[in-house]
Image (cartoon, rainbow, N blue to C red; front, side, top):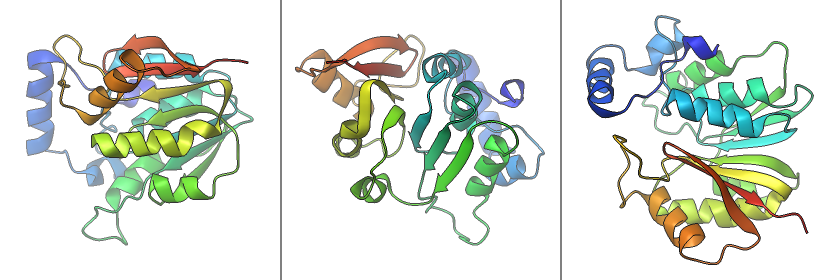
Length: 218
């Protein structure tokens, strides 16, 4: 499946690719119909990093699913006996009964052998309110306003087990990338983990716009 994903590119090549997809086949209908691969909002290097850090995890939560490309990375790398929870309200569709973004994501992540996939069509803060299960790996890639990123962190970090990991997407300025210092995830990560005291959390890896933090083991 990885080879069938159209990854985000950086620099001039990324701008050219984005322009083409926007003008032509950018609508998720075309991914759902199988006329193009899912368009990732992350780079190939970020995809590899998600696979690396999710490998063997049993309880994985993704906030913000888009066309499902990152869900593919998580599901293929995690423990096949585990569960992948995909949280997204998919609320922006003009025709809710069709909702091709949700359909494209479901096609991409798919079923078949591997971890069980649970789709949760709701806002992340509503899901967190009643969440009782431990989380081994959490990907925060939902609303990018700094207040929303902070809310996702506050709502979910207490559910992550000791030694567990949280990944923030679009949370780092990198060479030829699309992020900037005023991005909400960048502002939150810089303020909370680079300038603040985030104990028991530590940054353990950074790849393009992704930042991975791990909870210490007591």
